[in-house]
Image (cartoon, rainbow, N blue to C red):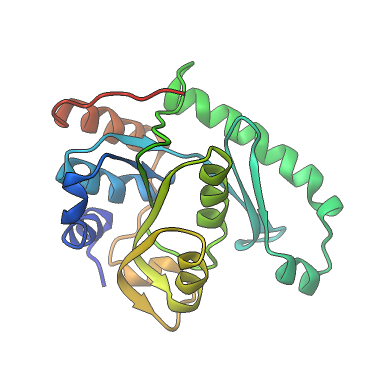
Length: 222
């Protein structure tokens, strides 16, 4: 159990000290992953960035992810084919919903980066951070986005995660770091005392703060 996302980030940081010596960029998945990623980035003295991913929730039951889509030159789509089959959805059925999420991504890019580009260093390590891994849809879409960029090394870090899903993710990346792997999970929020919603403005402030606090922070834009 974590007090809040700050506490979760600090506990995760304790498992990641080896990355101080490695060239990497820490990516928070907005919005809840950003406060966790902030603690890791500042603690390791590494650049903090966001990778914008939108969950494709089951209509009427948004928490149940049928998939997710991540930003990129060509957006990266991950669909959970088993869940879609169970609920009677085809990829064609999802298209209008995907288009809506792409508009959301475009809007969020303006909020988080204005007209700037995402900080990327494909020769280094990308550390993807979320506040928890339940279905894994958003993380899998984020991984796909980095693979599409030919990112050399990908690490996923999460305070809490469903063991079965973490095993799936482990096959896709170089390392998975999780402070509290669990066998049963209904929702990520049940593992936090305070799981208040994170506003985009709050996430942007954390990114700005990280860039001020991290010594020798150099951007790698591509």
